[in-house]
Amino acid sequence: MKKYLYLLFLSLSLSNCYTYKASAESDDVKETQQETRQKLKKQMTDNVTSMDQADLSATPSNKTIPVNTNKPKATNIMEKLEPNKFYKIDVAEKSYKIQVDKWESDSLVAHVIHKPKKILKFHKNQINQSTIAERRFSQPVADIITVTAYAGIGAGIWAIIKK
Image (cartoon, rainbow, N blue to C red; front, side, top):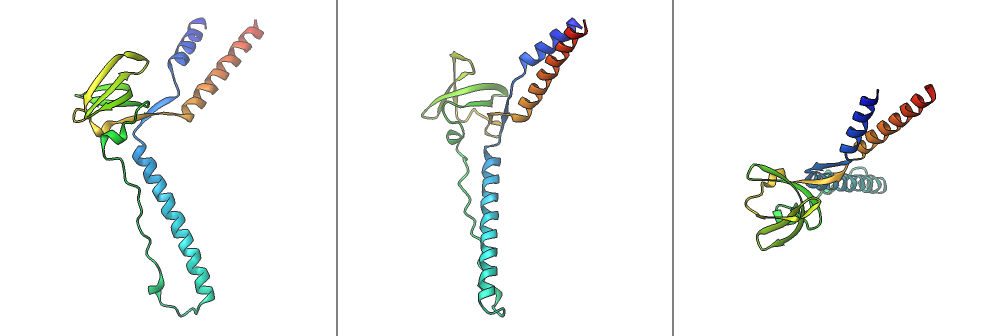
């Protein structure tokens, strides 16, 4: 029992609530989809009210076509990697978890997370742009850790009371 309790505490201490996701593009896509849905709903309600007020024999050529107003996506690597944020990048088939410090012309100056003395410099052409992942807080992982911790505390209290 004692061995399993140590393993539980060890596994909880080694886990964290942060995950690395390449979701910058997906967030932009979701936002633009929501914006277009809202615009279409507004146009539909406008069309319905105008049809109620006008003759029902109006031609369908009066309908407006939605204009695609997508935000420009960050295609430049300098726009993707912002200073003071955490990223996981692949350079020369090796993975690094870094905090971006700054850009010096075409070179990225960064340091390994929690090791500010270990400074890394990469040219923008060395970084694999398709595998850039930003660190984000993961609520489901945090919930799982919390429930597991509560269950462990409950089991500990039960074991103490049982004696």
